[in-house]
Picture (cartoon, rainbow, N blue to C red):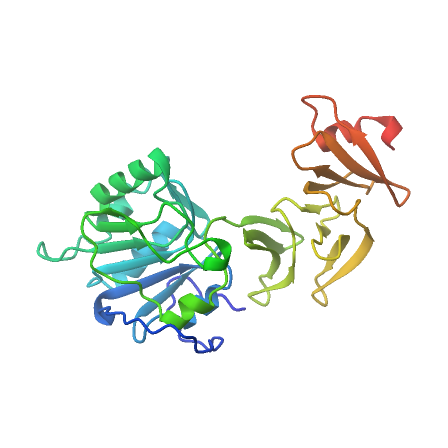
Length: 337
């Protein structure tokens, strides 16, 4: 995958999408519609390829302020009356680029938000459609939408449930409103059928040895590595939680592969994962993966005080005392190696 630069419309070759049985019609004014897609969502290029014809589409740079990028895009397209933002979401929060737009950050971004539709005539009522999961859920979601409505003066549609594919308990129904939203979704029906993910979990980013990595859990967990030299996300591998990755003191990157149950190390030279050691006992839900100063591995068990650690290539079990951290307790117990 190749990331579009900040503020760049998607005009590149993108994957084709097979025809499906969907047959409903969508009426969207392409001249006044702008679609923003955060590159942190799973398979964002499929969504970009499936936007309705002639609609302007901008991919957010994951390393820059997403709100500022949207402001710049709207300045370039001042006649936009229908803004569609596709990103990960949680109650009262959108994840945009390297920024969160939430109840806690609305004041910080108020100047940008107030400028988004400021160039429109008073008789042009803008619409803002937010595709992130659960953005409108709960008291925080309701308050967030109300405040965002006041700042942007836009009619808003969002969701209080998962947005995306039905196989992952998602729908494409934006069911919570502030004002009257008349704009329909900006994607081809076959895209909505084919896109096999939801927008409910923001990726976790980190960096080591000049590489940037991210994990996201969108029904199917994924881990990817970004090489700034090639501008490509690659090295995809399955993980069960966003914390099943670790780096050692030399900057090597490790994951607990959810499919093979092996601890693997990333090789940036040829973009491959090398098995280091078999994982801890199968059939258990694991949380964090950590690497000790001596190069041993520690894996915590979810919802439990039990951790698993390696010593001489073998896995051992240890029950943590209350209020102890996994790695900290491990490192300071000589009997654990």
